[in-house]
Image (cartoon, rainbow, N blue to C red; front, top):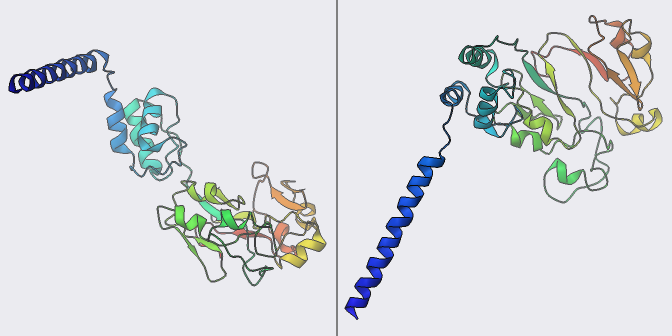
Length: 273
């Protein structure tokens, strides 16, 4: 009995040794050498793995940048410093960094757009919006249930006194996580400017309906369109839309006659809301 046990143990040990040797040889023969610049690029990146660059984490972006498959300016949290570092590492010209900030395109708080029903369910905008368009009067507006707050890794968004998200431009890195999380696409990224024309509404109802569901909704009256010398503001599905590529300057007459103040000139270096 003892002899058989020794033989069995010896056989298994020998097989284990052979398998281990085979794996070691295969690992050495099939190993793919990593470009040392990938590790250097990783050292330059902030390591937040926020996904704002469109790649699976900082490692995915580092691989793509070194391989020449991604531009240098996709890391918003890293900003100009990362762009310069990557450009120096790869011997490329540094692209200009345009700092951006997330902006909520809705002003319909609980006072402006009150509840039309009580909601009982998961405390998320994504879930609530599936139940007959949400619990607020405006079915296009912000529900304020923290989806954007929960995904922000930089503590840049909080729900304000009106029940709407307020973005802190000093903390926002424009990673885009909140933009993706909003089920109604109400958060958008804009260049940080001291003056920018913004349509803070997403309502596409006809004027008569829009007025009833929200006091500050865009009612498609065309006042801004008629007063815009650049013809950058147009109406699309009852909603004013700005084409910033056509806008040559800040024209106060565009926003002066807006009856609901849905279109404003905002300082994006300051909090809105």
